[in-house]
Length: 158
Image (cartoon, rainbow, N blue to C red; front, side, top):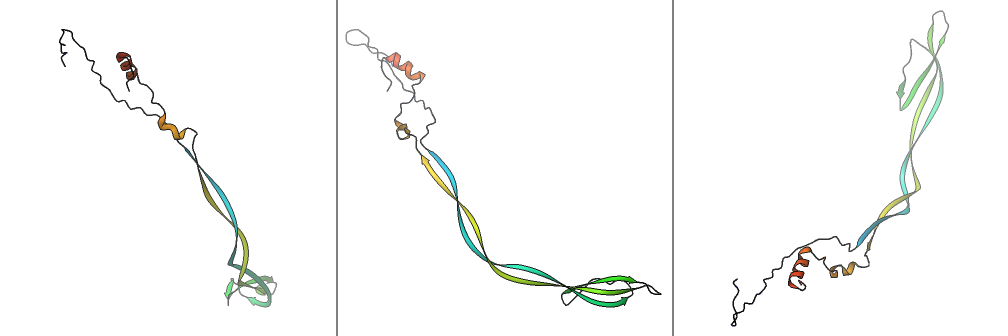
């Protein structure tokens, strides 16, 4: 823009001022969150069936000669194990001395038992620093450009 003369022959100079926007960021703590867990215990009674197995061994005398070893066998749910001995005879032969009759008996018994169950519960606490509410009212830091304009034009740039 060209300077205009006034009516008396003097020139009047008008300064041209431009503002520039500079955005700065800074980290401001406005609050904190603390998460803790507390474990709570409670006792409950559990009624569940418990399987119990007993083994009954009965010795049965047999005294019978056999031609060779007798394999173990199951008869009516019983395991039969033959016990052998050698007996001197004109001819050597095997004789079953006794048998072990082994039987399994399965029994379901209902039994109450006290057990402890655990459960975690989160506890959330928010902490606010003393100046967190006033963080927006803090003055912005002055930039190098702000100081230069202030010195040139003799005042504040606001």
